[in-house]
Image (tube, rainbow, N blue to C red; front, side):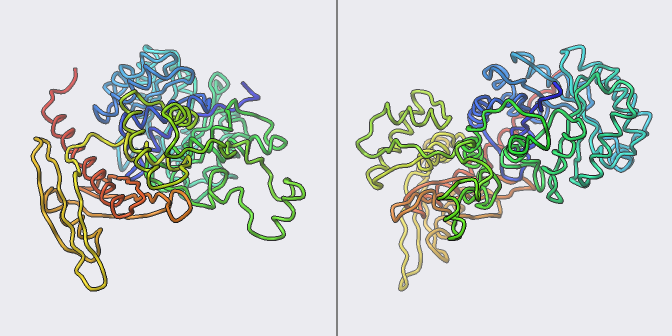
Amino acid sequence: MGDRVIIFDTTLRDGEQSPGASLNIEEKLDIARQLARLRVDVIEAGFPITSPGDFAAVRRIAEEIKGPVIAGLARVVAADIDRAWEAVQVAERPRLHVFMSTSDIHLEHQFHRTREEALDICREMVRRAKSYTPDIEFSPMDATRTDPAYLYRVVEAAIDAGATTVNIPDTVGYTTPEEFSALIRGLFENVPNVRRAIISVHCHNDLGMATANSLAAVRCGARQVECTINGIGERAGNAAMEEVVMALQTRFDVYGVATTLDTTQLFKTSRMVSNYTGMSVQPNKAIVGANAFAHESGIHQDGVLKHRTTYEIMDARSVGLADSKLVLGKLSGRHAFRERLAELGYELSADELQQAFAKFKELADRKRDIGDRDLEAIVASEVRRPVEIYHLDQVHFTSGTSSIPTATVKLIDPDGQELIDAAHGDGPIDAIYKAINRLIDVPNVLSEFSVQAVTAGIDAVGEVTVKVRDDGHVFSGRGASTDIVMAAAEAYMNALNKLLAARRATAAAALTPANG
């Protein structure tokens, strides 16, 4: 194992904790399938105790995804561990990931435990997890702000209790590469049984050093890196998988270790996660940004044309950036359409394929050539939308320099009844949103509204992402259309339906007796 770094992907767990990045089960399954194609070693599928929906998603992923280890997260609480095992036990290769805080800041102010009490709980709960499966990971949360001498004791106790992987989290993104290197070296020098387990790292990006810290730990002997696609995650996010993996591959001369990933799947994985979470990738993002392999400077263009390596340290094809030669249009058939979606990583049922194909044909009547980004937008906005509680049936709006922007909206409610109302606003989109709010009386705050062209040209598909906030929770919605006003209406309805579905799930859970 010494010459290989295990890639532990937590996009579906820590990544989903990004505000507004909530995913439904089918979206999670699509991403998990793509992660399996990428050949990640471990998929942390979720935190099963947190909600019935998260439990169901972890269970489905455990049942259907073959190849990677499927991990479920649990606190050092018996009910958490039991529930996590219930979710992942059907996996081909299950893992339980148990965590507890070890810093004095957390123990004193959040959990009101002494160090010795926390140490005893660690031993007991790791043993409980070990009674279910031999593959146990333990994380001392906030490890980088934990007294090193106490951290050594906790790690030793966890390994003695049965942990086969010990993960060292920089939970708040506080450490620096030099400090983190010293901490990892300290583990190998001061924990007697440390070589009975794989040392892992999980770095957050609050100071912009998550990737650098992860790579520093690898140089000191860590052999698992926990990361997410596009670096999404809590607050400023996590170490970006694409950055860690390509750094190891490009600078093998420095790190001397490799991964088993199929890096040609990185770009399409990045786009799928971006589409489903509604979190756009910044153009200058390393590896997967739109400008990562673009050259505008004349000097750079001249050099690249003469020899690619003059200004490119990686081949764009190594991350999957080669363009498809299959052009889809209004004369394309279902077979070509299905095959291209499969190449992009989307596996649709017969009904979903029919739904997507109908939208494709509708778009093809308005747009001559349809590219991959158009197809991804169709799947994200039309097929993988949450269960509709209210259906947006019709929208009519008027706007101009000499008229008041006005919109009329017709919705279909859960009982199949038509609801119609009209409103005026600062513009057509504002008027539509006000009309929808009059029909659906659900308090919320529109916290983000963004528009971007999915493709180039006058007939480009525009994608709108909105985020609405309700009682501290953020829900994202997406809409895509050549008509940007309609895309905005669809995005808002998408977000409101997620909000309403979450309220219903919370109400249903409150009425359900506690398990066991």
